Length: 341
Image (tube, rainbow, N blue to C red):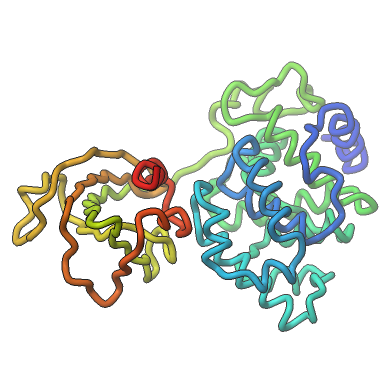
């Protein structure tokens, strides 16, 4: 088995030669590191790249983010998904202003206490920005460690993640924890990938248990399967005299605080004519299939011309040309720009 010093040295050498040039790479500002880490949760680097640049340009520091309207933050986040990340960023920025006098916290526990910041994100910020020796363990790291060291325990169990975290803490170069964390995450992202890993060029191929036992396809082991819920949404686009109706989503559901057209959700797939007691005289527009991590949405859109129903308490009457000012889920993007064009 490799010594901790040999492991971290080989990892750092590989990282120096193979790391990708990313807009947040080499950054020491904890605010910018925080933004990049939150964006990259559940988001590919290629997709998150431009969002990061736009976000930093619009909100260059904690003060600008805290003082922004949530609607503006969500609008900029439009298309990234998992909008709770944007809401948490906004709430945490206010928390930093109120509890830390606008100065980003400098220790792990205070970083971990920020809204929306978990163990991984806190460790990434603490190690990269402040060189604090905390292992940042994400899916990439779990995969790398499981394969190299032959961890066959279920990685969906917290005790397995804790074991891997402790192992990483032992392997870490305590003088360069930020480099260690970035390097092992990068190894998992571009070398030790979930499918078709580039084992022949891996610096740890000779020591890798999974490679030598031909268990690459087995590790990391996951016992739990994601349960998918199917949901059926029907949206009604009322248009009359350049006005339409929208509403803001509330409650602890998907797309919280984003806007949408008036909607009915049904238990099963059906057409407009199948909806009992629906007083909408509409024309079917199109069906969109939209997949989230735990939900598959079947979304049907209907347009109702020359008619505006009586406004309900949570409905807003807005000019069609103003629709682009409101943050909508990405599935509405084409429709919004179609109606305002």
